[in-house]
Each structure stands twice: as C-alpha cells, then as structure tokens.
Length: 121
Image (cartoon, rainbow, N blue to C red; front, side):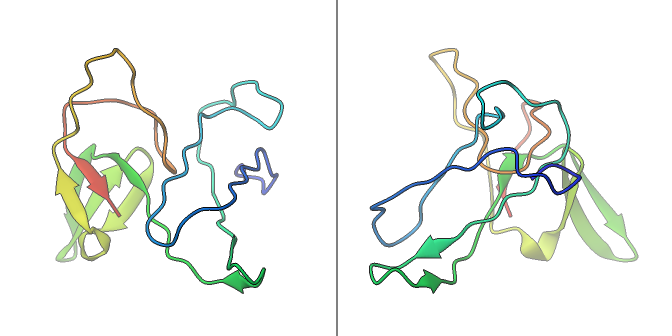
C-alpha cells in the first residue's frame, strides 16, 4: 500500500515450505511501471495446507543510515523508518556484490545503498 492506503501491488506465492521465507518487491506497480520514491506498507497473509489463515512474523531488512538515542532509548534509522534497538534481531556487513546487481528490496526501504551495516528488524 502507498501512504494513502491504495494497494499498488499484490505478490502471491504458493507451495512454500515451512520456515523462514523471503519475498522481494522490485518497486514496480501491479502494472509493471516503477512507483515513485516514498514509504510503502506491506501485509502478509499466510495460509496453511488446510487453507486456513495462520499467524506469521514479518521482518524488514535494510541498510542502516544512522543510530540515535532519545531519552536513553537507542534507535536505528533505515531511510525514513525508525526502529528501537530492542527490535533489531541482527546487524551484519552487507554481502559483497560481484555481478553488478544492487539486490532486491525485501520490505520498506529508502532504496539508498551505502557501505554501512545491514540490519534485520
């Protein structure tokens, strides 16, 4: 969804195995054209083999722009997004890209690439 709540793209995956999965969004609309820079929300609806909706946890991965502290609470900033450090699961060096590919978006991101650390929140 865009900032106005309009659905801009639906990505359907089927027959996924149990366990962690990754779904990437290329920043294009349902019709294939690129969407403007901005914040977008995503919703995951997972169904079990019986067809019933099941609860799942979602994570966002991105390049950390800054780390800040406000009233004794630490935050990381990924583009325009801000997460409490207590929400961060992992911080690691970004993987080296040798084929010239800039990688895929795996959630909300500013789309900016830096040499900083990659974080999963």
